Length: 319
Image 1 (tube, rainbow, N blue to C red):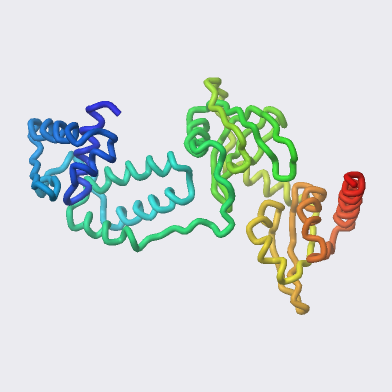
Image 2: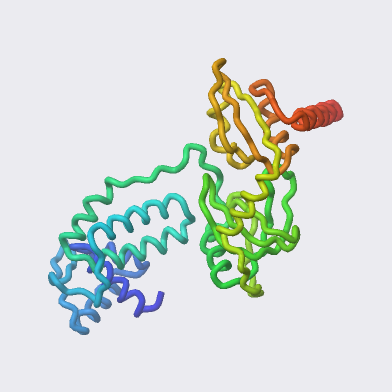
């Protein structure tokens, strides 16, 4: 960070908080306490009304602000909630940018509104999902993919599909990202010559390339509409689960085309799926053998028998 950016950052910190200690500024910006004092003197020389007290910290005169875009109290609370969500549900780079933006927001609030926001800070918490999976291999995944979608730059992925043992390398053209249980990016895959949906946590390696692609008319909304139309032509698969098995598949069932479920009189839970492929669904079900019954279609039961036979032969061969 250059000196100009650091001085602006110090000014924003002074505006965002009632009192700021010199040591806290030094730690935040990674400089010595002497450098912080020199920067504060620069602000004073520029006409910024600073007050300081030994052992207490520094503050700005009430009413001094940079030219602001004023926010209402309700808008500030909504953005505070967004900051909490970003910190828990995105990557560390996106969270850092969100925190910097919130510092700028706090800097332009009136003191009563700023104090109100501070009082709410500990009253809003976002907890991580119970089945938290490993984070993406690259902590910048979220930022890089959004940048690629906005600037039409290609991305090279090393990606491991859900049931695949080996990863594949492919160049993709992202059109957008969304969150549903996990973060996903929808992109045109040059390897498959079609649009594909990629989960962030299955991306083993990511490279934002300089190559650009022509803007596409497709959007996330048009992609989902096409997927809905495709599902209308798929055959519904029905599977009955024992009650104790249901809680173990609550988070993963959505990845296999789950559409509905019904509690039966005998306590079993019948779920309906529209999977991309019956063999794909069968491979997910097989490790849970003994806790479910494949009701329909018959082809699903056939896939389960074939996969069970392959697993048995593989096990016998290992002996």
